[in-house]
Amino acid sequence: MKKFFFIYISIILIVLMNNSFAKYEKKFFEFNIKSLNGEIINLSQYEDKAVLLVNVASNCGFTKQYADLQSLWNEYKDKGLIVLGVPSNQFGKQEPGTNDEIKKFCEVNFNISFPMTDKVDVKGENAHPIYIWAKKNFGNSAIPKWNFHKILINREGKVQDTFSSLTKPTSKKIINQIDKILNVE
Image (cartoon, rainbow, N blue to C red):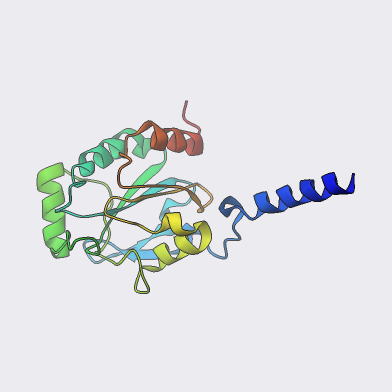
């Protein structure tokens, strides 16, 4: 009986150490980031919404995902989803442009209307504090491995899940998670 009790307690402790039970000292909505226009985006304005945080690049093989991100934005913005594009030049130097060039590229080629941030680092010691926070609270899967890595933030301001660049924004995997957060049926 003691052996069974020890195994049972061990399993519970392992489950509790899972990232979904991370002790968040700060929530996503407590951060700020600059927009492509240089204005401060106070993320508290997105409180009680789901946020799909995506590091983006203009010259990447995954750049066509901008169309899916815009489609997702069009479909879910009135249901409580924010798509937030975060340009980064850390992967293959595929986002070399200025903020103005990035904005023009997105508008002309993909008619992007969802919020976009200033170009920032998304990994390493110079990463924007949002990405450092995501790694601290959700682990290495929150660190982008390439452009168009996705981090889904739930209504409580915690990381719900992460998705690789290979996962399309309109994939069933992502849609199911968004629907679950937003209680969409």
